[in-house]
Image (cartoon, rainbow, N blue to C red):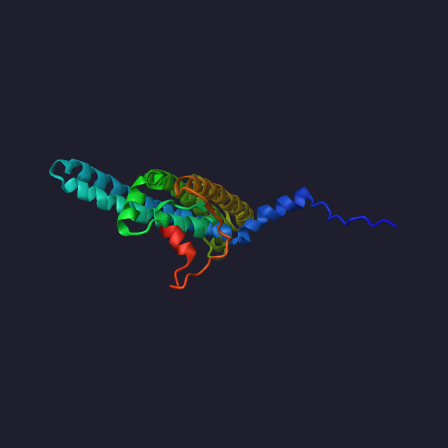
Length: 240
């Protein structure tokens, strides 16, 4: 007799879609994405002010040589901020970032500095820090509007319990009759909003994977070896 290999039953695509759609409400990744998007705007604003001020002052004072020192310090600060962005992208977005080579392999301060300033990761990272502000502001505005509206509608039963009215422009809703419908609409809007946040975070993830490094890819699920000094490889990869 011949034994036939058992095959897993085909998954119902409708059930798969519903599980994915409603499952976002209990997905930890969705809330990490929301956190990243909310951090993007204040961080982007800080980067923008620092970069514009630093480059303006540094280039303006190059004629008296002080500007060169300012630009040198600014580029080192940019390298460190790129390291912060790598940590956020790996930890919050699950990005698979390439290493920043060859700076991570350089030995000695002089060689490290030469490697940093020759690395394409420095210049791609500088562009990433610049676009963090406008793109972060757009994502933050979308996040605030969609979350506030969907959460307000979802929690509309509280308006009924406290005997208040719900007013949308010139329409006055009777809480006793309208709160169930508004709560259901708000709940589905909240699910769509979380999926929208996942989509925006996906864009950030792809940008980070392209612009925050060079060389081989570091997968977020790789085991992190520990060196005798106690320093982990993940930390050195992110900050190198």
